[in-house]
Amino acid sequence: MMSTVTQTPCVGRPRAFDTDDALAKALEVFWRKGFEGTSLTDLTQAMGINKPSLYAAFGNKEQLFLKAIELYEQRPCAFFYPALEQKTAYLVVESMLLGAASSLVDKSHPQGCLIVQGALTCSEAGQAIKDTLINRRRDGEIALCERLQRAKDEGDLPADAEPLLLARYVGTVLQGMAVQATSGICPNELRKVAELVLANFPRNDES
Image 1 (tube, helix red, strand yellow):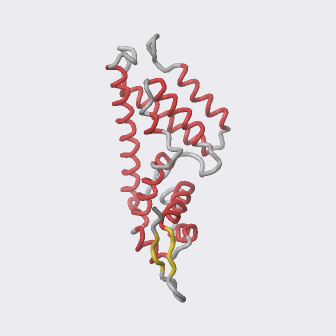
Image 2 (cartoon, one colour; image 1 turned 30 degrees about the vertical axis):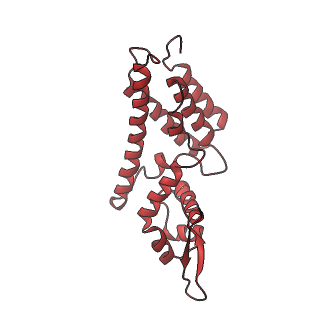
């Protein structure tokens, strides 16, 4: 359901703005420029509101960024967590890698991954944001490790497979793909990277 907040400009009557739309616009700015590369002026101009309205609706810049991260992870084209529902470990990783190869270079939004690149380097003031993104990436690794461990327990992965190492390997590849996407790699080349990983992914003969 659309939510609105009343904005009070310097002159004239108050007007309402769509907070969902404003947050989506803030997300795009953060995605393109990163947390520290984004100024409050960048945000207010993109969102079409003034600073008092931004603070009233979303809190400070850090709080707005965290709300944008939540929205980012809920996008219909988000591929990581939905992939965990696939029936086999191979299909899980295939869905992640091919999803990344498609989404990371989708021209309808900024390139790359906000979770990976939103705050790779930060000043002390932005350390909490950097730590938050590190924890998000770690949460993803844990979730994938748990899914791969279940696959091993069910005989879907070979007995000598190492779920934690595999999860870190796939996570490292996904993060590298995100960086390559921002460097202008073509979609076909990114897909070839995914296919190379899949060709070497451990599988039982019957899986």
